[in-house]
Image 1: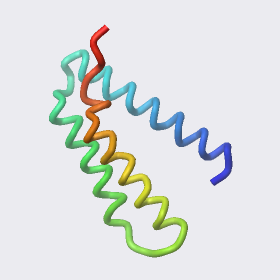
Image 2 (image 1 turned 90 degrees about the horizontal axis):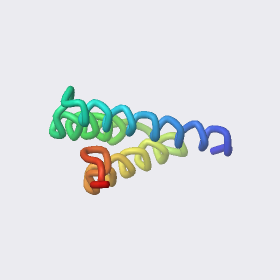
Image 3 (image 1 turned 120 degrees about the vertical axis):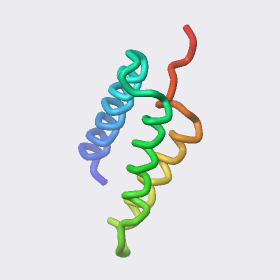
Image 4 (image 1 turned 30 degrees about the vertical axis):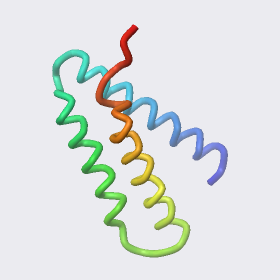
Length: 80
């Protein structure tokens, strides 16, 4: 993966996390719904067929999303 696409992926992750936090903070989306969105995203990557670098990237994406779910980083903000 080039540094440009890596930066794009990091930016996309940050933007999505911020959006999910904002939706939760404003009471528009409860934490369990955010967890559901993340589980659906992970499942999409886990269910991708094939082999090679593309399949490895999907497995890595699923693992990262599952780590976020486990850590609950997108479900709540740390207390100030």
